[in-house]
Image (cartoon, rainbow, N blue to C red; front, side, top):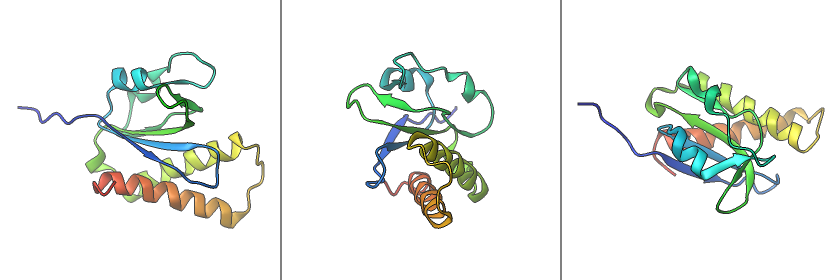
Length: 130
């Protein structure tokens, strides 16, 4: 018998940046599409989620209920994501944040802190601490 887990949407607020971060465990495209839309108003294209155990949705999304803007990291099997995978996704999110706030050349330390914060958020979800 397959062990099915419930999709859980974890929200994080970096406070100093005008976005939210959603880390979603146990990916269910239907639930994600019910909860979020693209920032341009269109439905999300979930075809990005085809491969791998985790991915970062490649553009700004909007929470349909709260109207908050932000970025999404979606994990298919969160228990198998290793530190390298966490760093990989955190780097994607950081680049999207810099692009969103139109910062072409972020300071190295600011970039490192943002990658660290996103990594910590993902790690909390994996370890069920959030």
